[in-house]
Image (cartoon, rainbow, N blue to C red):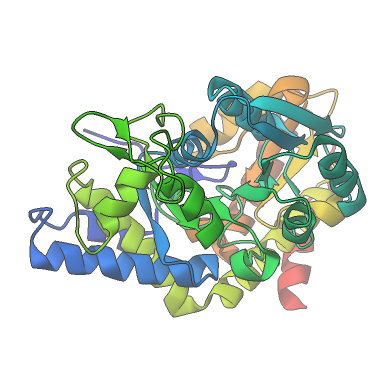
Length: 405
């Protein structure tokens, strides 16, 4: 293989931290080797710190971040369950689709792309729908918006609902407080602020969510419900629709008994361990501050080039910014110029924003000064080649002012 050198400054995946790549190059050990089981236990402890939780059930789902999302929803939801999904971008629609595939009665509320929900809007919807689950994205990279979650847990709990959050794009680069905010289940991925490759989905489940999942546990040999202990009922719920993504079985796999469920993706476990270890070593709050600093520099830089920022900047994720593509510019040609001439990748978006904005990320290993300044300098040159009017040195200059302050 001859992989071209790239600086991945889009909405993800990002350039992987070299220390994570080095960790992945280590030799495999057997999945029940004592060293391996100790490593799994260590990973659980590290991700408790990343998620800021005391949840015992904190581990990895082997697969991309979407595997974590689907594992959470397929294990929590039964046919007919009412689910509320506040949709403010593409990945809210993804939660809707997966919940519908689970047979749930899905209710949505929506705001225009580029906005977020007020706590009052969510509270009103929860009161009206009375869902079993509120499923929400924290940071939606399609719009770059970051949904405030501080009050959502209490709102849901007051109506007897659980809260699931997809924090794939935000965890590690934006504040996230699993326990303090009362979030019952959170999933993420390595390929954004955690600085790793796609292929492993960290997850944490609180006690109330574990109770729901465990109630749907089945005897593996016959896939029969375990009889209910309280009333002798022989049907404790519907069969979880997936074997591979059955969190009840995965909990047993990561638990003290290490019951075999699948062969652990060992190299991805090495990667996930190193991602978490580096974050914990840096300090979670310090990592969030780093993302904020470089995100502010990129924001100032694109404005310094005369580009208009999309959406409610007050509620933007710190690790990605969306800018309107100038009318006189061919957006795809600019992206191609950045890639061909400078080896830099930025993204466009989806749905109503496709071809209308560029999304530029500053996350994980790329949340650093040289990556920001190099991207801004290259973007200026490509825009000039397209005939756009930009301030000479305006992007780099504005970013450097942020750094100087």
